[in-house]
Structure formats: C-alpha cells, structure tokens
Length: 85
Image (cartoon, rainbow, N blue to C red):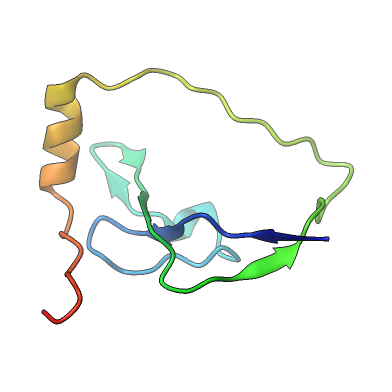
C-alpha cells in the first residue's frame, strides 16, 4: 500500500527542506522553527506504514495564531512564483 504526499516542506526563504533531514535543517524565525507547507511540485508516493514502528508519533496544536501574528510571519516568507514568471 502506498500513500501520496500532500505538501512540500519549504523554508521561509523558499528553499526546500528534505523530509529525510533533521530538525536543525528547519530555520529558526522569532525563536521557533518555521516551515511553510507548499503544494507538492510533483506527485510522489511512499510505502504506507511506520518507518519506526516502536516510536510513537504525536502532534499537539499549541495555539492558533491571531490574524496579525500570522500575517507578520508570512510577511517574512518568499512568495511562491506563478508558472511563467
């Protein structure tokens, strides 16, 4: 069974961040590591399932940013170029 990637990991400067990387590859912005989730540039798939079956995965939503805080973070990001630019 395969799963399909839903997004591409990108730094705020527009550089790709490899899925196989480490947290140190994610740039720090205002004291926190920041990734931008872009649409995938091409379809890619990988085997479904866990690479490390004995390691539990977990995600915690710590807070929802206020519109002004989100706008401030996005202002420091490079805008995605439209095709043909």
